[in-house]
Image (cartoon, rainbow, N blue to C red; front, side):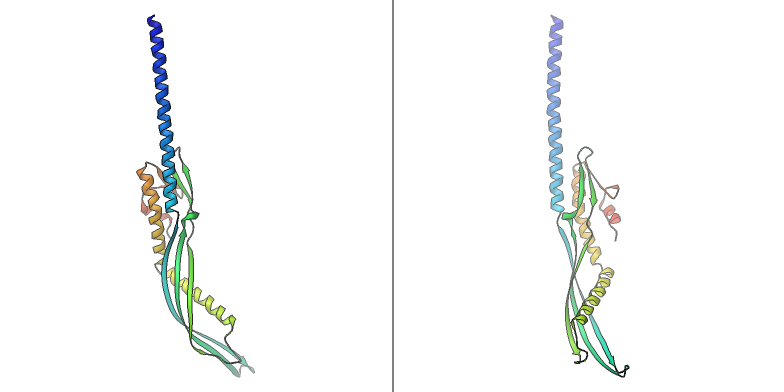
Length: 206
C-alpha cells in the first residue's frame, strides 16, 4: 500500500515538474521572441537615411583659344565663373545587412553601405568674352562642369564633411550597441565583438 502511494506521489511530482518545465520553456521562448522583435524594431528605427550637408564656393577663370593661319591669328574666349555648390554625404542604412542569432544572443552587422556623395553646383558666368569664330558651345559647358566637380571633390576630401557624416553614422549604429548591451546580447562587426563606440570608429576609419 505504501509502495503504491509513493509511486503515485512520484508520478504526480514528475507531472508537476514536467508542467513547470514546459511553462518555463514557453516563457523562455516568449522572451527570446520578444527580444528578437525588439531588436528588429530598433534596427528598423536606425535604418534610415543619414545625411550631412555642406556648402562650397570657388571662383575660376576659363580660357580657350582658336588659332588660324599657322597660329598667326587667334580668337580667344574667356569667362569668370563663380561656383556655389551644395554637397551632401549620405549613408542609406536601409541597405545595411545584418544577422540575428537568437541562440547565441548575437547581432552581426554584415555590411554597412558606403557613403553616397551628391554635388549640386550652381555655376554663374561673368565677364564673358567670345567671338563668332570661337563662341561658347555645349562642349565648353561640359568641360567646365566636369572641372568644377573634380575641384569640388578634392575640396570635400580635404574638408571635415565626410568625417562629420561618418560621426553621424557611428552615432546611429551606437543605438544598436546600447540596446544590445542593455538586453545582454552581443554586437559583432568586421569579425569582432563591438563593446564601445570608439571601436566602431576604428573599423569605419576613412
